[in-house]
Image (tube, rainbow, N blue to C red):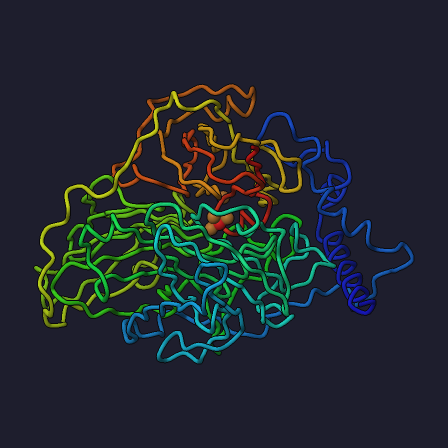
Length: 587
Ligand code: C2O
Ligand code: CU
Ligand code: CU
């Protein structure tokens, strides 16, 4: 223990020394005197404590005065420095079949409900025919993890067991909240994304557990059928744990949905789309460069290779008939704007939290990290064809670069080569979900929540919600059972996918506003009309794109559990670096 601590102290000293060396004197000073510019806080008020000072504070408290750094201590251990990045164009595309994650079986019954066990381990997996096996993390030995198939009204228990090594697969930044020593490097806690679950089982980011420990969660499954997913949520390292492979599907079904005769069985395919980068030896690459005062945190990560269900650019052989795809953007930061190269439409039948009122025909689907689209694609007119699913979303979204059409512009290839084996399920039902739109007058409170980026010089330092950090006192205390409207006021240049735990919400509208005026005076002056959500967003959502220069209004009821939950940006690099806040539902 003492040894470990010493190691961390010298590591801390090394980081501090390096930071002091690379910071200009102005920046070094500003880190001790929060009122100094050039730190820009895009949020009026509330900000006296939001400074680099906090980030240095840990080192200042932990490092005894008499310790002086030696030359040796000044180098940060750069984990991946001697590896060569893999050029993604050398990998032949569409040579591996799309894997379908196995459905997990329960181990028995616990207190009247099915009981499952899931073990997290490190292992190697072939992600492409021509690539060495990649060391990944996964649930029950697979990346992505097994799929849960559960029924509404039938709760389950899941024991999550951490048998990961004690050394992290990827470089940790010890200046990120929660990841500071002496917290151990490897920590996990599982969150059921989109789930309406009691607080003890929600995967609160501070409820992490270490290798050798486990945690048993209860999932009530009382909400309507939906494409949910589970993933890691440990404070300060979520981006690394998810990138390493800790995610999987959780398909909640119900009798209503079953009666709709949507494509099922082998005609229903979950697809988690992720971007990754690799080294030539097959290992995962994640940047170990820094931003602001953080030595190994990047404000966004964009991989150069597309991985679907754990395979690089896979193909799927299909019959000339309708298929149902559960699309999930499981990437850290990348948005996807999906199109079928055949020019044919998608019929979107569901959003994050369940079925849409009726199918919506769209030619493209925009998915931010964590968003899901439940779609039907009809291949019946395309026998013999090969159809690409393409992506043209800019990174960062919406004003960054277009994806390379040869790499990240391609996702998966459908080969309509299988013989027709079963009777066509006729037309899509014209009405899908029972869906009740909220009335704005149901809301008893409107909360304004700003999205902020803090720069040092021109480098991102942290991102905040409402000008507050994770550890600041809770300010949002909705009353159990009541309806609220939240106005997400985006003061940054990027779109942020904002996610609330516990609830499914509805999008009311998005409206442009005068950002400069708001930053100067705190006054909200709209500059254009409020635009209601597109038809394929007008369903149950748990993650919403809050666009730059817009106020996005969402409405939700805080039911059915009281206690502490979180809301955050689902760009995982943002979430890890302060763009996450606890909130508390009070009885
Ligand atoms: Cu998908 Cu709080 O996360
Ligand atoms: Cu969630
Ligand atoms: Cu964000």
